[in-house]
Length: 196
Image (tube, rainbow, N blue to C red):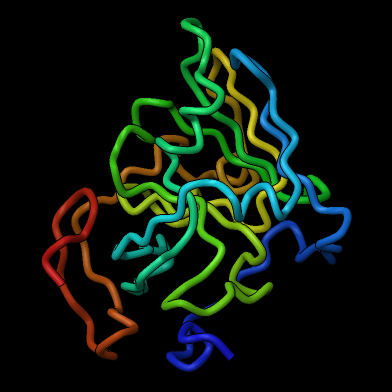
């Protein structure tokens, strides 16, 4: 049981939770990249490792701060740089049940991470394991769980929640969130929540 389970962090399974075989798992990077990639799980673990302390913020009114461990987005892209005409990136879960697209400019922060552990514990399947995205500066529905495919594109596409009426940009707006860490409701400003 990970720290997320122990704190009672909500676990959403939009698009359905896939069953993932580590022996067959691959992370695909395709589209407008200099060099497409197809990485096995051991190859992902061999990439530069980092830990980011960041808050994952759900549009449904809760957020959680944790130490997310894995591969920084910047480090991941350094091995396969985008082509000049790439403007967006689409993330797709294993099996294709969930997808979301984000402008590359919104990914250009040092704290976006492809996470496979949290607080030094493996990321549980219900929270997106074995590999999920954490984009602290956008609402949580952009932080794709069960990451299986990354495609660089030149267009803003829809997505699981975006096609159901959620904002395509997913910028965190001023409001109030239940801070799962403390169990209290806290007001927050727009953008990544850094104050608590």
